[in-house]
Image 1: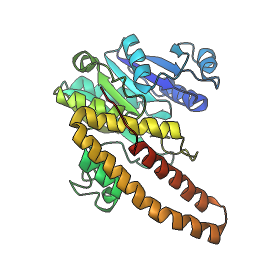
Image 2 (image 1 turned 60 degrees about the vertical axis):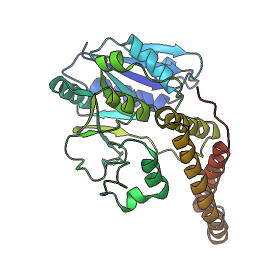
Image 3 (image 1 turned 135 degrees about the horizontal axis):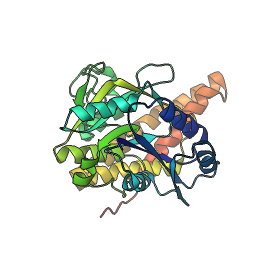
Image 4 (image 1 turned 180 degrees about the horizontal axis):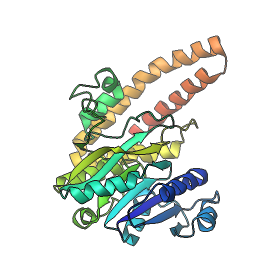
Length: 319
């Protein structure tokens, strides 16, 4: 078996169907299997997979066990030489997964590889190639300096804006939307950290791979459509909470309590600063446009930063 494709699903029926259709339609020249791990979906996803994709190996969890645990279930079942962790909100284009396999076949030092993520309009997506997540990275993201100085090797580090994304190059973090990993990496580095329920899986595992001596690569010739970040639904408190818990855990695990609390302070200060501007913006939007889209956007940002303040003031006892 050349490739095992592991897809974790939680109530994304339509996206999952499109993803699976693209995998079977746009993957050729390699022997592959597809493993779907369902985290207690209630939208008919399980029934759809059984009916429309009988060749898929399906793992049914009765509850949402989190992204790391579910992926580990799939990894442990996988039989391929390479294992691709694929988000359900992706669509494979032009045999992209086979291209990733071919690169790994020809580069023994490569432990993992990712592709060029594109938007529905075909434009390149931010986040296809990432730098190591540390305090400087987060300062650049929180202040928006990565947008003002994308070519800077300091402030442009989050999205590696100083590199030519039309060429293959080594990178520090492979995004979790699409990442193909050599089986030996799991044997050498271990499985995903199940303390991370949702969020920083890619930050954590990429750093662990690199510390074991593996190289990570970005291959722009392989393209995958990614719908991530397109949802306009209001931010759900429980997801935001789990995301930031995973961020604090990541900093504690890899950099210690001091840097974790420095990151917490950064989030706290930035949210306070942004709230200072959001409240007047809400008042202006209400007067000028009524309770329209601009007011709704400001309201959602207000809720996000109030939640971040609450999370930053919580106590976390990581062990």
